[in-house]
Length: 68
Image (cartoon, rainbow, N blue to C red; front, side, top):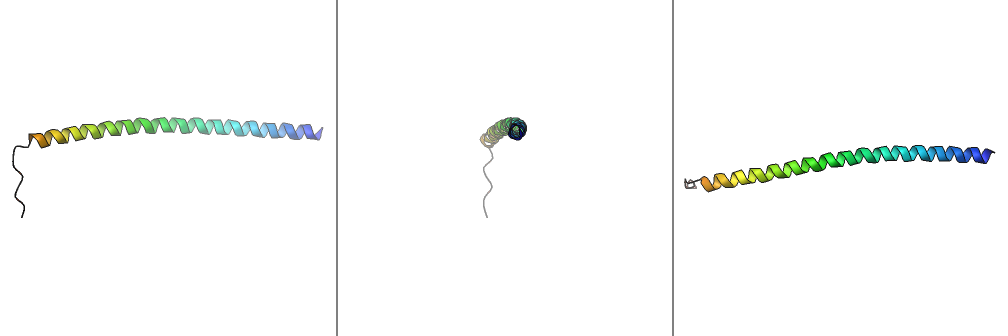
């Protein structure tokens, strides 16, 4: 009978461990999704900023200053 109790204790431990790992995995997945959205926003901001810089450079009708 002691063997059955030991097996039940091991099963309970494994179930608790699986539950904890599942929760950790779900939290990590949510974090990854937030980071991916942040990366997408940053990439878009860089593209927008690059486009604005290109517009400013194209609009510059003044010649560059002489170098000393």
